[in-house]
Length: 269
Image (cartoon, rainbow, N blue to C red; front, side, top):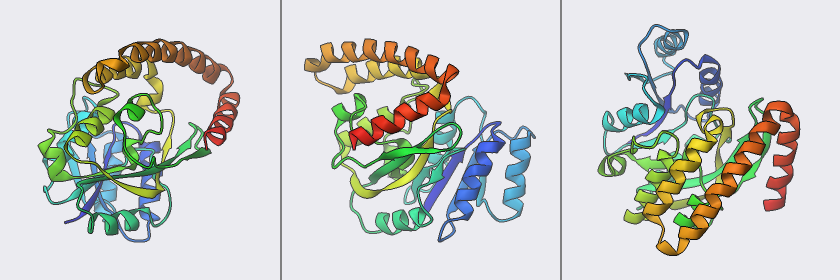
């Protein structure tokens, strides 16, 4: 049994270098797997160099058609007894011993998945605040973004993900939250009471908020009882308007947007 850190990356050398720095800074050496198109791009050449230096344990070739497709490829090309931690290009561990803590935890728990908290970082890579791990995973909280967990702070046994058939590729942005909901119907996760990763904004989920909002409306209709129907549509329209204004502020006044986030995170805590 091993704990695999899987990084899916395409044409993002800057983000990959940030993740590599975090990998190399860990108290014990992570088993690092990179999934990337073999297209001889700058990113691909860097991956080959990391492999040559022994910093990457394995490279997996994908078709470059989507991050969840790449993550699925890692799932179905790994051993069922291993565990998998998706830390994509630009993401970082929360601390120097994050990998060591998780590796020791998965060796002694009965559940086949676990989660922790996370730090939120800005696109300019400044830490904005901490989101503590909720005391229990609750589908309604997750799908209304209340006391939610991020996929970067969620670790699964590979065999469990294979049983779940990996990420549902009909979802381009919110497939991770769909996967968590499906997993919770089989068994509940173990909570780790520390932040496990740093999630920096500016990636796919940040740039595709409205698409994510549409997908989450569909996912809520699948996993939540009918009593949530009115609230679900209210939440959809509220988030639609909110996303529009947030994007406008971010485009014109990014530092103001980050200052507002800091205040909101402190208020929630």
